[in-house]
Length: 284
Image 1 (tube, rainbow, N blue to C red):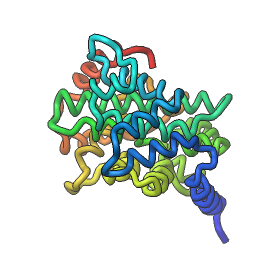
Image 2 (image 1 turned 135 degrees about the horizontal axis):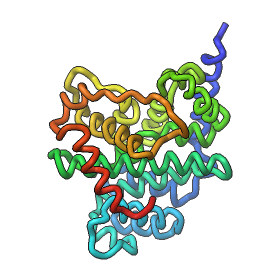
Image 3 (image 1 turned 135 degrees about the vertical axis):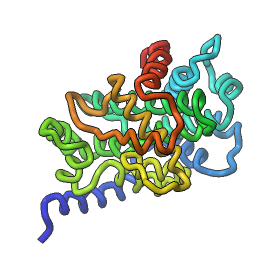
């Protein structure tokens, strides 16, 4: 006989399969996801798809200005963004925003959605800062991985809100985040996110980070560095107040493993550096 968590796991797996069909997905969002996950896409077609969906366009411009705030004048159009931040970066931001647009809810769901959204944007921005200022890593790749690393929480909040709130309440017991999720769901947001990412054919590195950003392998693997960047950036985002859940909860940070992979300044100095930059940005 199945336990309650095993039954919930199977139900969630079935519902995620249905969610992949996304009947509420706007045609423009669907087209943007399809275009941005292809290897070869036509620039004008992507620009047109973004411009044809005002809410998505607004978010793309907002995130472009948040993450690339160093420009003397703000980014005001998609063509302006294309010129200033480049096609690859625009594509990655558009992919993230189109995916997020699927999961936007109303009422209480919207409040938790905005919390996850802010955490995701700040994590992505910190990934970019760390990659650009201290590492020789492709910060566009790190940025999109940081944006999408918690996609599983977006899906939980959207499709399984009662379980999402149950997790939030249970976290006060002192268990860590993943332990709490597995007790209640029989799975966690990393596995749920992996199901979605693989279905949508996200880049391999992004799929890896979504599945593994709460664990750091002792062996050197292909995506160890980008995974460590996202793991660290997510920790710093929460440290700065951009939390996934209200109240106190344990979300383990593997400092020793992180610093074995990444050559970075001491953690407090790094947080101070990031905080000084984040504080200069527009309110998210």
